[in-house]
Image (cartoon, rainbow, N blue to C red; front, side, top):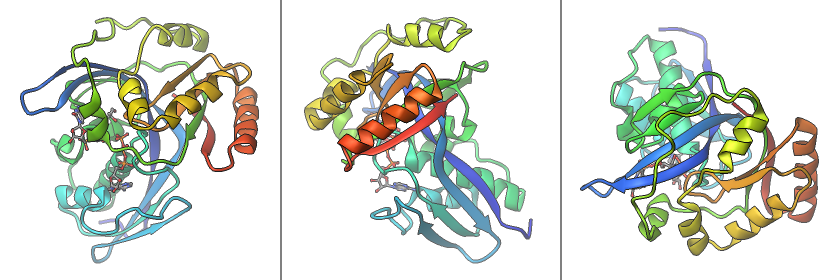
Length: 276
Ligand SMILES: C[C@](O)(CO)[C@H](O)COP(=O)(O)OP(=O)(O)OC[C@H]1O[C@@H](n2ccc(N)nc2=O)[C@H](O)[C@@H]1O
Ligand SMILES: Nc1ncnc2c1ncn2[C@@H]1O[C@H](COP(=O)(O)OP(=O)(O)OP(=O)(O)O)[C@@H](O)[C@H]1O
């Protein structure tokens, strides 16, 4: 057991593509998704002590502090007791894996603190937890449990926008009209530049975008606003929404876009970031 506190980042997850390719008998959907991680996110700190969760940070309001918090569910799964601080910077129920990334960061931190082995079945915490445990670019298939790490991707400069509405993942899956959409190509191309990657991404989809817009029409406005910004090469929703991302040629263009969107929509959560 380490005696010093251990902090692990819980980066935002972004689904650059999200193809829904089928549905299992238990109702869970089969996915094929290209997942990357942002250089922004939450932070989980664990210290030796009695089991306790404290939530801090600008996005802590409304996040459950009881045993339903994914961080505490992760601690129960790994079987470790610790004093845990969750510093929330990501909006909840936003399609960028907040709770799943927190759970994964907590597992990594507790494994470092106590020497415990990482559990095998982390998907029992949530479909996004296996990819968040890896926390690097990956292809995600099955219902989320099949994670294939990808060779380093070109860095993408993005702006993440959430109109500050929480979206329920089951509600969006329920609204899907077609559940048997084509997957990504069996062999993904090797992308040597961000331009190559963006060009290819434009040929792919997020199949949850349409049902999410039906549930929360403001998502269509977010996508439109992103597409109208200077240099925006592609605008797409992440996960089951409502967070959308725009991709830009460089960090300066992303920062300028974020400044302009914050001016025009002071009520939206807007973050420039690097994805890789
Ligand atoms: C949509 C994604 O964000 C894409 O990365 C994830 O698949 C969702 O991951 P998550 O939030 O960790 O999802 P979970 O907490 O496991 O599931 C929430 C609910 O979403 C639906 N769900 C989730 C994953 C999946 N492959 N099929 C589903 O139908 C189910 O109704 C499930 O009860
Ligand atoms: N650590 C946590 N942070 C945020 N929400 C949490 C956490 N633990 C449990 N929750 C609950 O989970 C719900 C979903 O939040 P989360 O941020 O995980 O969003 P999500 O959109 O489902 O993520 P994903 O991109 O994985 O689909 C919240 O409404 C909240 O009640």
